[in-house]
Image (tube, rainbow, N blue to C red; front, side, top):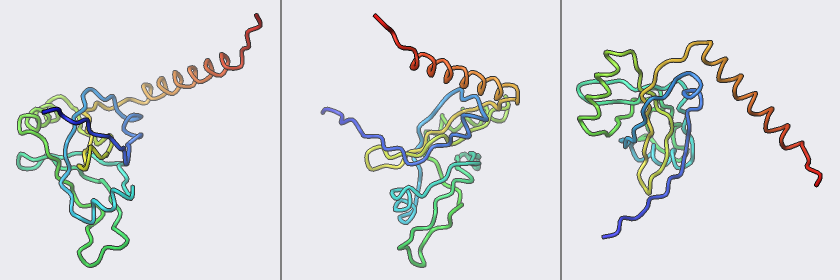
Length: 158
């Protein structure tokens, strides 16, 4: 059987996480959502800013992920900030939990996307950046931007 390649349609990204943390490893996790949450995600009403992952009872949950209530939803509509259960293999959860408890890492949602018809979340094992790290990254980004601008403006006469 030939395995079909799934399309990846990004719904939301956590750009602040890349600014505030060094991302050491990334994992792909499934997300357990309700029906109205899926409809809101399809509409793109998701915010990952200030979200993180926590461990409870051998399971991992995404905390602070805001999925807006579905407009056409009725009394069965979901709570926007409820904790979303992430679906990972048990050994991955135990590995992440061990690293978070010992070495000062944190687990942060990086993006939410559709892989085929399934909603997936990319989570990252992260270390916090200091203020001087953020300044250094901003200076490097600005220098690259200036260099690209000068190379673009440069014309070759031949």
